[in-house]
Every structure is written in structure tokens, then in C-alpha cells.
Length: 306
Image (tube, rainbow, N blue to C red; front, side):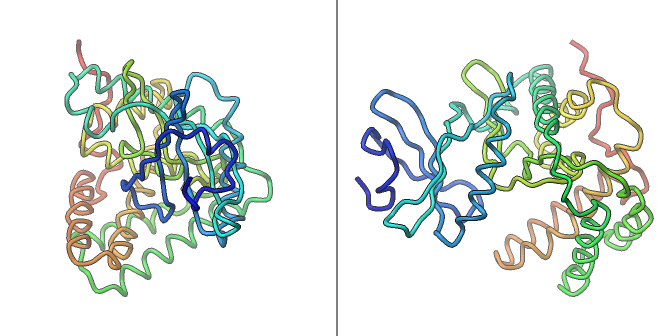
């Protein structure tokens, strides 16, 4: 048994352990097969992360009562590696990366998986944040201020940045009195799988948070870049085909803010990543006609014709 996971109950029943290198998380991640054929996800972090990881685990545990959503579920949490590490153990969702599967499907299948994604997200958002949360407008306006400041100081030009900042400033008022719920924190096709039975599975809750549930759509641009059908289905499924008009303006506000923040975020990863993020952000801004419209060009107002 590896020293790294010594002290984890049941580790002696693990038949194989494979490290997972996908993703941006600083956690070490492993796919485990037990002797009885069960699949597990193990995340290991430095012991200095104990309190943060404990809060994450306790928050994900609140999802346990949610039915009819295929997702990675919490099993155990504690200290391992002779007190040097903290571990979180989850069920493994068996399936193939949604990013690879979705483009191979027909139009209706892509759309229906998007509907599943939207319905699953709505269920996650049924868990309300505790009352002690800072008011959302105060919290997110501070983020916006930081995003704009960081973008202006980084010296990397983004076509349409002035229009984007102007749109953000004109719509800050929409943040007032927004509800706050559980958030997955990184909800897009990169954190989804398609199971052998064709269901959508949700994974990687390590960026979970609490906030405006509609902020979760700030990463839908990654879905739309892969499949406008999937992204549109996600919106329709979330709202059960009754999308409120104000949603699109708020989604645009969150997406606009995200594009600005992505430029500064990419700097530590080098010029290649910065250039990729600039191209990506300009594509997103173009889809919004540089925020002359609230509704992106990729959005389909109804399901595809069969």
C-alpha cells in the first residue's frame, strides 16, 4: 500500500490505483478499483487544506438526498499519509468524457443531453445558502471591480473590451436581491460524462460555492462552442421551457465579466494560454455582437425539429 493513502479505511481492498492527470485542480486525483469491482475517486490535498476540504466535503454531502441525477457522491473524508495529507473519497461515475461524446451524436441527442444538464443543475440549486452569506450584489460587484482592474493593468488588449466594460457597468443593478444557492462552481461539458446507458453524469465538485444560481451559466460558452444544441437544451431544461427575459441579460453580465477575468487568469500559464484565452474571449464577445444584444447568436429558442 502506498504511504500516500495509508490510514484511509478500506484501502487494503483497493485492487488498482491510477493517477488522473486531467483538470486544473491542485489536488492529486486517483481512479480506484476495489477488489469487489467498485470504482472510486480519491482526491488528496496537503494537510494545510484541511478546513477548506472539510467544508467542500460537507457541502457536497448536502446533495445526497437528490435523486435522478447521476453524479459523483461523497463517501469518506479524513487525514492520511501520517498526518501530512487530507483525503476525500467519492463514488466514480462510469462514462466517457462528454466533450468527446456529444459531437458524435445527432441533433436531438445533443439537445436532450443538454436538457438533462439543465434539469440536473436546477436540482443542485434547490439547496439554499445559509443566511450568513454576504449580499450577492456586494460580493459580485467586488469581483467585477477586481476583474476590470486586473484587465486594465495586465496590458493585454482584447477586442471589444470597452464595449464589454460599458455593458457590465450598465447592468450591475441586476445583481441586487439575487437569491443564493449551492453552486457546482465549474458547470460545463468538461466536468460531465456520458454513461454507457446514455445518461449525463456530473463530476468534479471541487470548485463548489454558494451564490446566484444563474451565475453557473457563466461557463456555458464552453458548451456552446462544442454544441449550440446542448447549450440551448441546458437553458431550456433548467427553466422547463419557460425562460424569463431577465435571465439572458444576467447571463450576459456574468459571461462578460468572465471573459475579462480569463485574460488575467491565463498569464501565469504562459503566452500560449493567454493567446488562446484572448481568441476564446473574442469569439464569445462576437457571439454577443460585442454586447449590443443580450441573447448570443448560438442560442436556439426551441428544440430541433425531429
